[in-house]
Length: 120
Length: 413
Image (cartoon, each protein chain N blue to C red):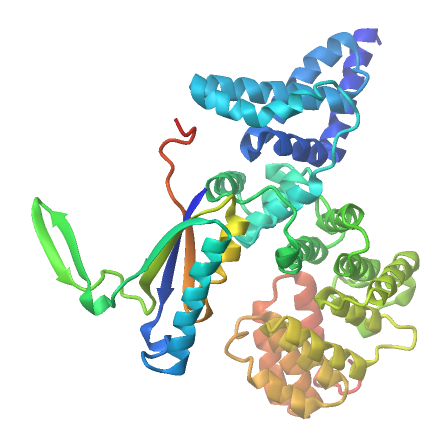
């Protein structure tokens, strides 16, 4: 079963770039990626640039409306994601707990929609 | 009475008993085979309906359990066959196939209820859904009985149960006993479901409908049988028994709640209490401490023959707070400090909880009691007023009103 781990965090609570804590966090991500590889887990993932770089778009009455930033006005923002293929939610939770940002943000786990459950 | 009629009565009785006692076991065995909660439940229901016809005609089969499981299993295969394309069915059948080898009716049904408990109490489900699902699948309560117990309407409770089962399938919640690295945390989640069920029954009083307190003790004992020698499970059973033993004494003849120190000890169920205490001793001797052992130890301290040792209880709450840093535990700790004669420390602890517990009746009752001890009668009266406003039962209102009246007659309470 494929799960997406959506990583949300409040930028003011993240370690700042250049601090030893930032280095530790990046080391944590590196170690996590190595762990997934070592366990033979099929995965992918990326980090996102900050919300100041975001542009939101919607189509209303056939007209494109764009706006600066994300729609949701919350403190925690989507900052990155992983997708991994694991047998069940307990395994997904075990890996999600190793994501360094879980220590100061929130990781939301969602199964990916499977449009062809039989695999044919 | 003719034989057909008496036969039908025997069948109905046998099925009622099965539905009550063995539903969880049959359901868990079925889920283990077909891996689909909702389908298992539907097919077991269909098998029971078809049993009425078949058993009524031919009498009880040699192994009623085996018969039901087998029929439910065949119905499940039918459902899957009808609902899927041939290719999809082939995939499903590969999963089901190994079971076909043991395709005879037998009473030796594997007990998969431990897996079922952990699935129902999975923290990915909403807390109330965990309670409802556990009562429905392992306690064998009907949806309407559960709805009544939690003061919900039946439709809403039915929807809650369906949503929970749908999430189990869609989110990939496994039908499995947790691995060692997740065991402690997940066990606590199971125990808290059992404890909340107990509490719902205990506060409803001894005569309110289906007894959830008994149901919780049944579940805790079942868990202890399925996973023996686990200190926290033993301690949970102990805690429930020690508390349950005091049940008849907790409400007085006038319907008011009776504080522990004033309870008539002759009303306590002594055998149940000593069994609970003995079980706690066994749990503690295993040398793997945990929150339920501390809670049970606190309950045991309260009922000690020489009266409660409050300094000891306060120390136990200090430890419990490290396991469970919740405002309710912090409130109980403050009460223990006050009882141990450290009223000023206790008042300071309450001050820190004021915002979080602003609408919690026991907070104001405890506050009133501490203020009264310190001689601040006007403030104590205001705190009792607030507690009475918030009280959920007549028994609690009666208790609090009496305490408030007692403010004018020092030494009488």
